[in-house]
Length: 455
Ligand code: TYD
Ligand code: MG
Image (cartoon, rainbow, N blue to C red):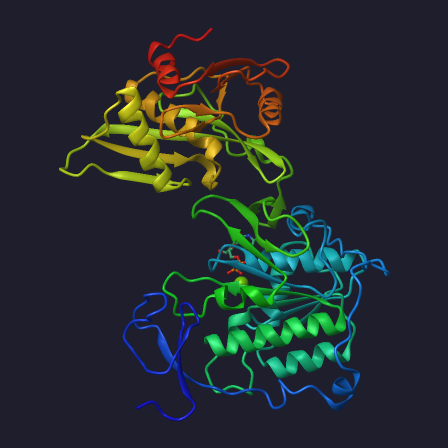
């Protein structure tokens, strides 16, 4: 029998259960239920007397007072992903794997914003003040008037933030905070949720922008930031492949801007540097383009980005051939392989297939279908694509190549980087300096790659 008041919270998805079980019935995670005592801050749900007397106040849709100006932090890529600076009074969650560079990024954001006159605080529950200071020195930020603190008690933090006026506060990380109103340990769903709720309320009531760091672990042992995504105004994720210096900041949710923008950074010894023109970054420009490589002219957010797709098709030594893909969707790879097989007569049944997006970028645009297919066919047929060719186009299950969005912007960017031809959908009007090899059907495009016949 469950004890009175006891509830079992899944540490992976946050669902509540009356009984303990080995597997969460909501998300299917194993060994994720942890007993937590339900407690509610006294009077949290009861409005005050004055509020009751006032009743529910309605307003009009018409905006009478202009919104307060955004805080421009000065880290351009960060500001852009936020939708043009940070909105005062908003709560932002920055998620990412441990070690990806979240603390580095936010120290830079706080320091740059402070240099521009914003009142900034950086509160760390993970590192000692000395450590943060040493890092700031190394990054050349020691002179920035950021107020530093090392603290994990939610009550101390909230009291401290109420005493002084701030514009921007970084909390690193939400998993280290604990509130004495709850008995569960730091990092548990109850604590993370309580801390995020409290800080988001503080953000609104004192009009200070609060940026929360949240670690994501695959094991789900630390309560993932999933459970607080709905409490914050914006969710950003910081991503990067191990072994590559590039880091991509992405918006997953944003109440104040578009979510398809990305910010690109490069991690170096002196911190993160912004990459304003990421196009050339993900290209392998050294030497001849080998068989199996195709340059995709993509769009990330509002900017065109050129990336190289690399494929290797090799005879399989095992009964079940391998399919490995990095930086692209494996379901999409299976679809492209099936279309190549059914509509173009290219068989992969007894061959291993490896597909890699160079530079550690993750591509999710359907417009990349043709680039992946071209790389695969180029490797299978051992025919390199021309050095100066970029590829884009969406592939349908029937084997047609469909036009994609913003083709002109893609071609212009390619032309800027010295590319002169495009393999793409039929009927595309060429941009200046570019020549288009259009194909209505995938079989035609693959035929051209096989013949090596380019006009
Ligand atoms: P960090 O910001 O501590 O990551 P997170 O807060 O997401 O856990 O950064 C961790 C990594 O970044 C660490 O392995 C070292 C590297 N790094 C640099 O390469 N250069 C630098 O200037 C800094 C500060 C960190
Ligand atoms: Mg950190």
